[in-house]
Image 1 (cartoon, rainbow, N blue to C red):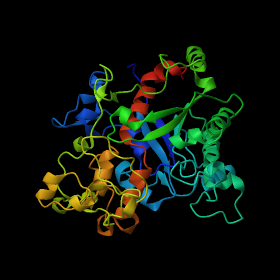
Image 2: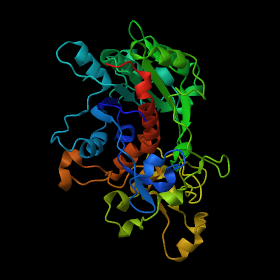
Image 3: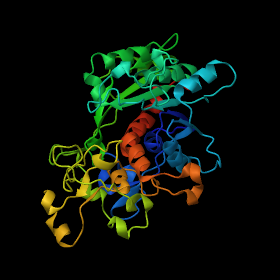
Image 4: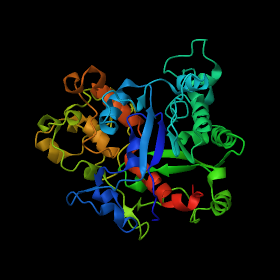
Length: 422
């Protein structure tokens, strides 16, 4: 990889608890099995033990984060903004209010940045939701539209406000993320791509959006997300511009990361999928843990197989998509024999039926154990307390950090040959 001689600043929108931000900064622990050492030997230079490694630090640094959820801020600030006592890097207003404040001329809300990232709200595009798409009845602040907001301020059109931020900041790259369901919702994908392409006078070169499967990048979970990547045309070298205009999967300028994991024997260069059992290595039962994020788990009873979230995880397979819901929608770590539980040896040891703990969900999402998702008010004060329900919610909303790291590393590799000097 060619040397990058400066820190690359990231402006993060719809940040949540920071899954994308963590992936872009790197320097966090992951399972060694989650790294393909044939393709990325440089990722295992900092082993912790035979099971865990610490990924290298990237050249990216988050300089601005934004989300309306108080629990997101309570998770984000203690991890990413340790030097600030008041969490000055994190902005809790909605993106609509921030853009309006900036546009009023009263202050410069958004700092200069090399990259703008954002996982704009996905509920309105999700197959699991009502699929209202651009016509959502929810407002930008999380409540219902009240008649005072315009139609452009509904939750389904918040990507347009991300577009407004890109137009203000003019980063060299922007990355937008959403659920795979967006692809099958009428012309949503093409509309979003074209809206991003029309930014400013020269516009952005938006390559064809691609659906990435988290399991293909070492995440022990079946999770699919569509990624939009746009490049500031005037900043690109002529070669980069020409190559990106006619992009193919085989192109050396392809900005999407190369697949690292797959089914057994699917390819000689792919590592096998990471299993749920691998992700849970070293975890005791919640009652024996000192980790608040592991001690808490949903106590919702088993409702029957006809309901969502009533199955137990397959330890020797991939985990389910971790959802931003809680209580009865969190899968079981273990079911009783009466309810069809298959882990008879565990049950014979007296281990009880229970749902996944908050930490187990975080492990499936590839968050490191030093990332706190449950915290009482006595630790950092009431503003940074996080309930178990909120912990589940922000984890389920997040981009898996390891997936984001693969995206970030690929862009870091390409950076020196993408852009003109200066």
